[in-house]
Length: 159
Image (tube, rainbow, N blue to C red; front, side, top):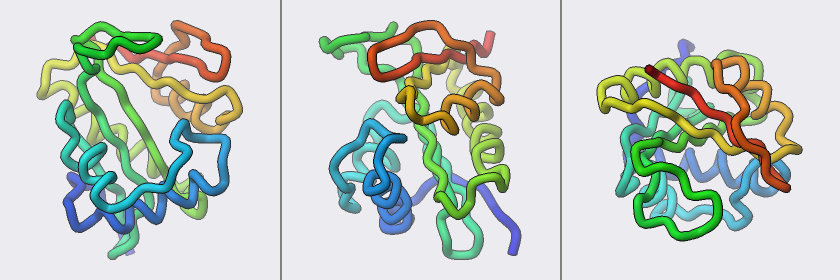
């Protein structure tokens, strides 16, 4: 069965939750610590208030991965604030689907949406122990620009 990429839908939330909650249970590769409900998945990813795009990679009815892109929050007052004209990317791929090109397929969709929205810079902040995530973003063309105690910040410039 072919792998397709498409915009995430509300009805994808259960499959997206299953995927992300498995990653959270395993630990070490996401900053998320608490399991996601369908409503939380919809509000933070599928229909994020500052969202530009959220794409899924699916094989039949199975969600193999998803990737979101959203504008940085201009009202963020916490640590490591980014310019309001930057965006933030998040990528999640099911463990069983690693090595199948899911991330590359999703990034192709995200780049199209980013260009259509006039995005100039994408930030990916990845935990140091997430060696697969660090390697993935480097393969996609992201470069390190900041180091934190627990994470590395990488950027991708579209200009």
